[in-house]
Image (cartoon, rainbow, N blue to C red; front, side, top):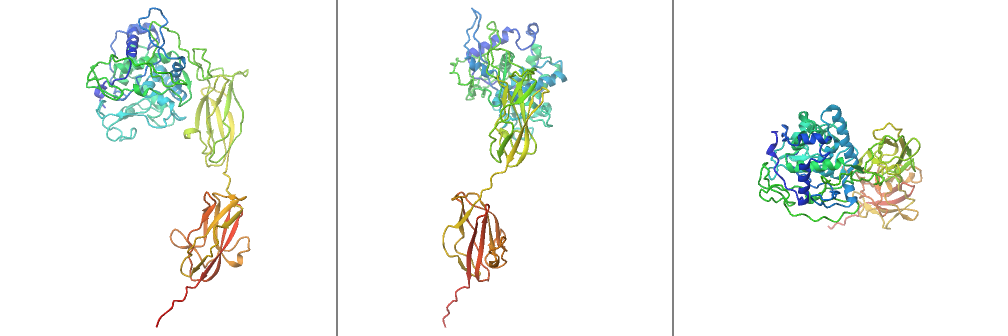
Length: 601
């Protein structure tokens, strides 16, 4: 694939004028700590022009989310702009990153610090790109292994508003055999993934829909060409290599700065979703010269206006209860309040600005809480959920600890989404509870093991047992009518045999039954003998058969037998029905010769 295919067409974003001012202020001011580690390096590199990287762009010009981080009102009198702020609850929600996604970013940082120590890749940069590209894997909708529950696909890259990239993977990753589409939480186009794909979770696969794999691949891409991401020019070049758009660069940098101010982990699947009205989905007629059309949420361009954010401001929405989607672009303001935003700890304590490490070093042990032995019937949920408490050596609770629950042993019991491993976080009381566990059809014993992620702490085991479903039983069988069952030889019975099973006077549904043609002289025996002549059923091939198994009563306890045929034998024959639970019923079947036909002479 040629470098910078199509030079990503400019895509508009429904950003407000306030957002544009913020972005201009951020990129112009080189605020301390912004996009790097040392303020003096920022100033040294401020005048350098980023050099576009030589490798192909990752996402081929797919949609990206243009929501900006929550703003904080300037705390300094006489500030040049007075920016609106969101309620603390909303701002705190935006600072939350789903636990598995956050773990993937940090593991990628650690891996690259070892393999490329000169790159200085911060995990917050991966988080910023992940936020912009997929809203942190759609709010963390991933399984315990980090794979998205459903593929995350960008627009079809058919040249209509985006780069034109004909199919390179046979539809293997994006399901499209005509054109490519960006794939996964970090939005790789298949041809780029073929080069940069990585196995980040050690399962032997390179899957762009897996956040561990995608985060490591994105980090390797950003570190290419010997970049040092603590240098502003290198940082800008890396981001532009991901997507060659100044608007994209500014948006990623704003989230990068925001996440460096403080984040906290939230349970998977509960992350703040991007505002659908702020997803760049349209384009105009311009090229990469900076005059590309500004698309609105309906995909209509404004015929070549520059992306300067000159549109009309959008009113602030009412805050969403529970820290919902934050649609207002906000980011810390240069020259304003430079304090670290307060983010609540997993236990709900918002008094400390600093977020505890995912696995605090103070945790010394795990103690089981509540029920330790788990029991369920096949196909049902376990009534109790595994729960542990992380403690220090002197028994004090430790919040913010990542606890992994893993199903071990031969069983098809699973956590939600079919997962065999899930991660929970301890709250302020030090406890972490596993999701609801559901038993499969496999009976027997297994173990749910709780371990501390990243620490050598003794595991806590929960013995679990799946019991067989109760076998439906019947203690009585009776025919549903009193018709005489009679037929002629070489024919069949006109009326079917219909019975009803009951248990303690109530209809017995789902009861297994057997129907057998038996000999008269064995009717009183414990195990009657099957008859080899007289009435019979037919099997699937139309052959005579005199015993039927795998019969089962319906929801009303009723059972209607298949058609019964006759051979050339006459007489009274017996049909025996038995059910689980011991109910039996014997039915008489009479077979006669055909009536003599009258003749006329």
